[in-house]
Length: 168
Image (tube, rainbow, N blue to C red; front, side, top):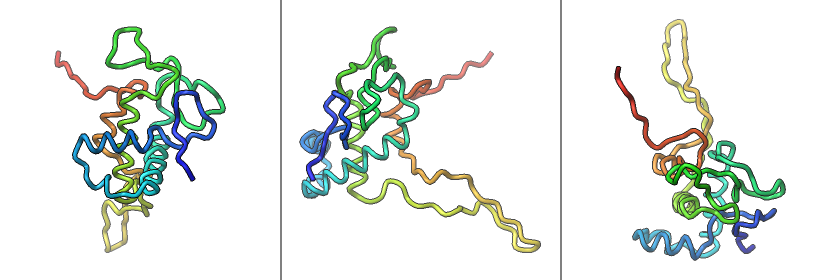
């Protein structure tokens, strides 16, 4: 089944935020030779999984609004303010921003190496054996990737890639 890539029209059946040729060029420029060793089918599957990860992890926090209620993915969006731009600069509402396509390629690379989300049973934080006390860590089962969080910060409402503190 051919990969359906969001082209900025708000497709109802889009599966990926970037294409295989885009991801190939992205990884070739960065020397990620492992990506080149995957078949086209494996790359398409990885792009779907990478997009799924982005949608599940960041989709509800994106700034702006979906262009269409029927679109499959969170982008394109309107009123999605650019964090790095001028005061009233917005991402185009008829395209997937290049940094978002880059993030999709990054997540596809990771997906090509294995699972992005692992099933997590309750992780024991501490355990006392005599009168038995067990404390579990809170976990949503989602693995976080620092580089991806940094790449996505510009699209998330109320986020910043750095925090400044002032002492008074």
